[in-house]
Image (tube, rainbow, N blue to C red; front, side, top):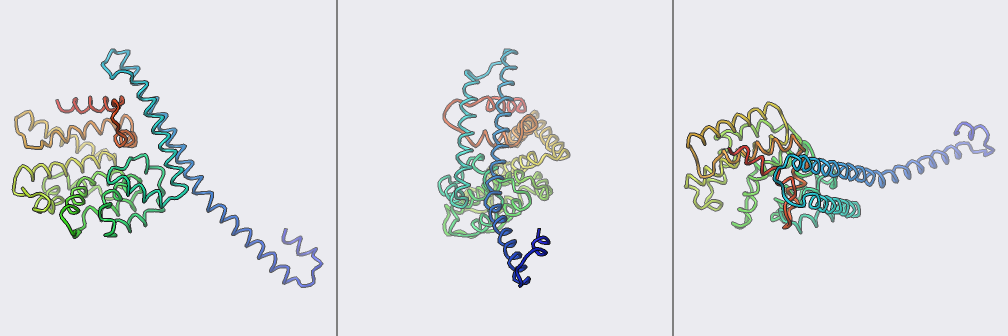
Length: 344
């Protein structure tokens, strides 16, 4: 087109015409990129929400089919299961769509409101598939900003829930392992206590680069090293010399590292976890116990592993971070039965 215009123009100053055409083309390009910049994030989020809706619908069908099979087999199940599942699914979808709309209107405001109003209890469905990775630098900055010290655990939870791969895992590792100085004991207890429990978030990022870190935490020595600051700090555990308190904390670290590895899904790690469970089961059968028996934690890990293989890690978090006072839906029943199965 430019060639035709060039050959047929009656304008004497060809350089001027060429400059005009180039400028016009540049303007059109800028407008196109500008419109794409505005529309692409919305389109991307729309696709994410569609994917979530499809997942929830598949989840609903799976639950109903399982409930029907159990009814036909005359298994005892909670009453009115179909109606409970239907109400849960509708409510969850509505919240996801409303959250997505709020996020698209004001991404940073949405994130800040979520942190400010939810403390450390942030529903998974208000983060996963909704908050974009482009906000990781902002979250990382907030996780280092002492003015957000009371919100640090909530910010770390959002990073974990995003499934942001290595970028998210790096941020979490820095938070979990770094040494922070606190102005008061309550902030210290709140943050350091949550750091230990955030170990399982590493698995939610989907990044396997820290698997060796998690594998070391499966050993007593590795777990004790990871929990060292907590179990030896009188501000955090006044009874730090109490052997039972120390054992409880070490066993919890092992359990949380195991859960993180379940989410990452490496087959060799699964075999390691199964062996650890069998070892603890043998101790239980022989009468060897501790205050917080590692066997109980590993039984829950095995139940979680079977649950994730049957459904998915997403299904677990959508369900268990959306609790209400009404009767539990069928998946609670299913997981409870799995835990009971492995505690035998």
